[in-house]
Image 1 (spheres, one colour):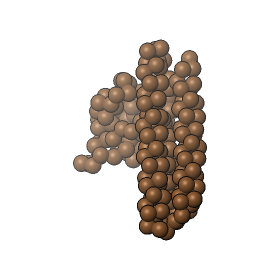
Image 2 (cartoon, one colour):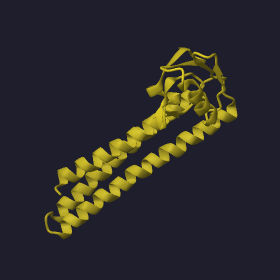
Image 3 (cartoon, helix red, strand yellow):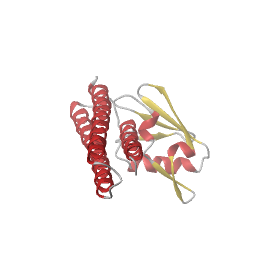
Image 4 (tube, one colour):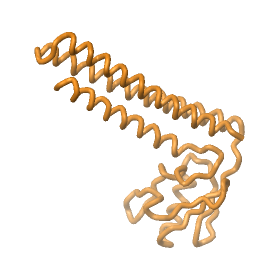
Length: 186
């Protein structure tokens, strides 16, 4: 592999780790209603587990409620069951046509737990990026041993991978701090 190929591969894999982290953040409760809160939930849809968005429309008429309107009446009970079984801590109100979720204000303890969850998730994303750096450095070592790359090229490549890691760790930290501020707002 050439230096450019190794760097491109590392960047692509770090971007994937960042995307996973972004998606984790979308699913966290912040005290404000958001359709993304339900993205992680899966509903039994005729024997297959499907995301809620595949079986219902999810809207937020205001900042403290979510309305879920199933495409078919059959899936109403399954959606309700999935919400009750989740760790969101929300009680669904089923009126036979739609499910309404009231998002209660979060207590200080709940906010602290979510901030801790954000930090844990951010650290997991950073570890993923560090693993990508390790793999990239290994590719440079292997290329140098195979005599397809000089020591200087290897060292420059390792420096580029390290710079890439720092950039992605910075992006992860920025996303985490923004989400923490959003959670701690009252």
